[in-house]
Length: 284
Image (tube, rainbow, N blue to C red):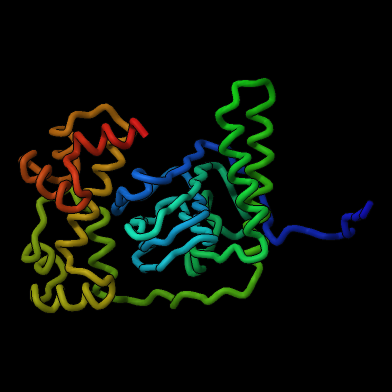
C-alpha cells in the first residue's frame, strides 16, 4: 500500500469569489461533431470544451487556433467563437456550460483574462480532465437523489484543475490598440441583423470600400461580408437549436428579409438546409 498525504498550504491560483452553477453538459462525436458551428456567443454563461480525440479549427475572439486532442478551450461570456472539425479526423469532445462564476480581478463568467490565451494543452492533466468530464456528463443524466450536488462539486473541481493550467506561463496576446479591422468586426458583431453591405460599412467608418476590406482581412482573416454571413448563420444555428421559432422568423431575426436567401446562405455555410440542421442536431 502506498499512502499519500495532502501537502499543507497547497492553494488554488484562482481566487473564487462566487462559485459556478452548472447549466449543461454536451458530448459531441460522429456526425454531430462534423457539423460546423459557426460564429456565435453566449452572453450569460461560460463554456469549457475538452477535445478528447481529433482535430479542428476554432476561431475564438477573432483569432484562429488549430486544435487537437487534449486541448482545452475556454469561451468567456460574450466571446464569439466558430467551431469546425477536420473531416479526416474523428472528433470526440465534451462541452461544459456554467454561469455565476466570479474570480477576483475578472468580470463575472470569465475564466481567463481578455488578453490570455483561451486554448490550453492539458498535458499531464489530460487523464484527470478526461475522467472529470466523463463523470460530469454521466452524472447529469442520473435521476437520483444527490446527483445535482455531485455535479456541483465536480464542476468546482474541474474549474480548479483548469486553474492549474492557467498558472503555467502562457503566451500573451497583443494588447488591443485602435485597429480599423477590429473596430469594424465589433460593429458587425453588434449590428449583424441590420441591412449592411460593404458600401454602407465603409461610409460608417469614412473610408473607401477597398481600404476597409483590405484592413479587415488583414486583421480578421476574411472579408467583411464573409464574416457578416457567418455571424448571421451562427446566431441562426443557436435559434434553431434553442427555440421553436420558425425558419422564416429566424431568418428575419438574423438579417434576412427573404427566407430563400437565408436558406441558400445557410446551406452554403453549414452544408444543409436550416430545417434539416434542426432535425439532425436535435435528434442527436
